[in-house]
Length: 252
Image (cartoon, rainbow, N blue to C red):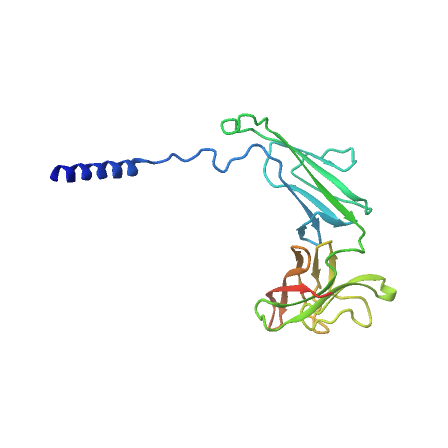
């Protein structure tokens, strides 16, 4: 019986030592990938940009490589030019519809992990360029500022005929109580509108309930919800601004 106990004890020690010594070396290729082209398309607004696959004619469009490569070759639609920088910025003057954007990259291949990698890869995306008067982001949105979730309100972004001032995009009730447009002129809160985003800035306008709002609004998901990151002037100290975040749903 004692011999059996000694044998079992010895076997347990062997098993424990085996488990403790069984260290697996880290995979040197973990997290690696072959040379692969990645880029993001953006629509430029006033001094910000938002990711986009659809843009309005005449707005700035930015194509940016998401990784560093040894060289870049951009082919844009039927344009005969070739761009070789990591970032390309341009405008389309007409609503020309679908535009293929192709990026060819060259990089040093990791042949230890990817024996067949030749160091070259190509990615093509389709950019949609549409009429300026048809942005997805116009509409009415009901929601709240995250610092006061029970105080709900609705703001709107509309493309309106302001008579002698022509067709204008007008932002109303953001901030809450900011009434636009003024009756004796154009809108005072200035706007740069993209297909799924808009930026607003008012250059100090604090009339008609407006607290000099400025910020950027970006549609989320399928376009029926929105997040607005903005700020208002602190009326107790005009050199300070109060940050706000509005989250809402499209109601019209």
